[in-house]
Image (cartoon, rainbow, N blue to C red; front, side, top):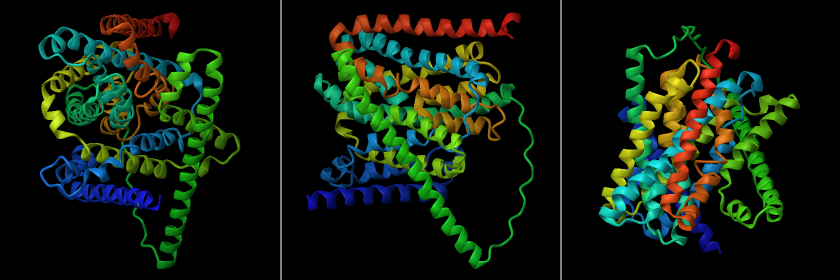
Length: 451
């Protein structure tokens, strides 16, 4: 037991060192200034020195210790999403949040649709791939590294043994694509006048130099603030665990299949609900100052960097080289679908400013929620578009469904039980229904009676 704990601690220290190295090199190279997260550099370094890289400095036993990390880190990320942010009234949010939810669901189920069509029409007849490969676009793009790692054992139960590594590779492609392509789209939007005009920011007031006593006090207060914010995150996670246990008690009385879904569903969708409950409790008790935005953002950023670094460093390169062609085809189709949703559907479904809201959904649908927030920061650095609050509440409704939610878990079970053709047809009907619902909502809102 002591040896296991020591090895687990050592693996965590190595992972943290890779993140620190990547952040230092990323800052020195300027890659963060162009919107590329330094975790990609950390992961690349880990991949090069990992068990499947050209330099075998990290043994396979050490990187295998990182396998349980993604779900834990994703849970921590989602526990921070609504903490430290004032909860707006539901009346001001229902229209933009509903529109973004309908667009997000259209993109998500459309990824299953596109994956099914490509696998059925091209990849199975041409390359003989496993039918569950049709799930990889949604798992990698919407769910990211955490969902791909969590879903790996579920895929393995159905004979798709390479699903975890292929899903992690798809998540890496999605993350890079969302940042690079999304940044180019922001530049295009700026030149085409799609962005809302931002108000001029006031000039910052120069800070007076701190005396040693003030600096020491500031350091102590910063540490105290960080500990308090981490405590709020921990409370959100505890509430998520309590909700999970409650569902496991209730669902056997409803359906055995539903119980199985709850049993294998990751914890992080419930952590988002936990963060809402904690923030609401803090506001009602007049203690909202206990959770502040900056420490929450720093916690989520560190957890995301650790997650991406560990996932990339442990990639099975021989397996990826064997399956690079179907992976490339699926990634290209998924990216094309998300671009179509942004450029064709977003202007017709989302309220103004449509591009800021749409680019956030594009980032979420291609490279998880963190990419969506990053692209929103590029398009709206001053926060004038009021997009963050509707996006967060949309996530609260969407996260239990897709991106590691119920449908992500159910999809491989459905493919195996009813067959990929039937599942693809079902996704077609669902995708069209959500798209039509978004168009009808926009039409009703633009009519005189809907104003």
